[in-house]
Image (cartoon, rainbow, N blue to C red; front, side, top):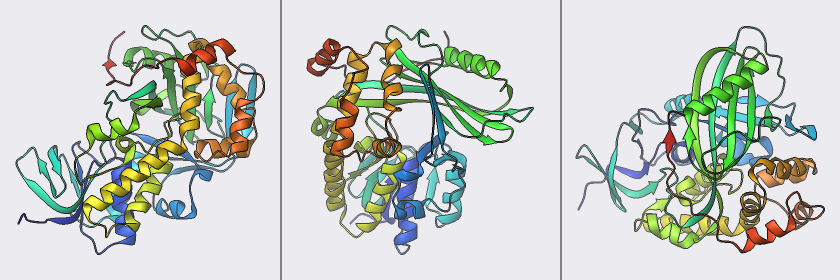
Length: 404
């Protein structure tokens, strides 16, 4: 019989894996857990944000111990034909604070960094250094894998954390500033561009240049130059404290069962973006990672194969529940010309604040869906029809470009 080193082994120390480890420590402290991360630190180099209305009371409680930025005065959006302040509270968590909280709360020896995985199985994890960690239950919390079974586009971004020499005077987050060049070159395709701004302190601001793009190409040089221009134009230049980049899928359809089969390991539970627990249009993950972590803690006594089946069923349910957002994504990428995609979001942000809250939380009602779809469409009708019947592009592995 193989040696068992822990009750539950979690592969992947990102948001989903870290929150599962935390939920288990809070609700099932008698269980031994190993959280394995191949990189040099838990959480990587990321910033996760969400609306306060996205979380249940239990979800709020799970995040209570984290140091995070909080804005209760709402947030702004800016479009060429509309500027608006919405009252919904907003939150943001940096990966450094995420890792620090886990370090405080998890039992010594729980977190294992720099541990590259060679293979996973229902009863343990084989590491590239030749060692093995045996477990009753194994959870795969690694990142999204582009298997080619899903379709859609990409959300590509570069963020920069800056300390300004003078107070910047920004009071609220700017979730979308689409009053920027929509004709910026983007490979062989196109993209809807907006800038995302978080005031982290009187002299600190996080600015992210974001694209809903046909291509997953990330050109660091081009994006860095555009951030420079944005900061210069608004007097936000200063000392660079940090930066991040990312390429996230915007899922519009595909064969979800095949996506699950392509990365399934018998008896291993799959969670996070790898399991499909994302908002298909906004690419937000934190609310779903929180709920998944709580679900794992509730079902922690299940044998590994039963927990795997439970997570697989929850992922299928999430896929069914979020079909409306995939439909909108198809319209966005297939019907709206790249330089005109901002009109789709501009119209959306003219709707009621409660509807927008439910949309981001993936809890839109039937009335919400009807309200989003009725009225004068922001895209040509013929192009919309073609988008619904066309075969959208498959999501394949992204690539990065360091130079223009």
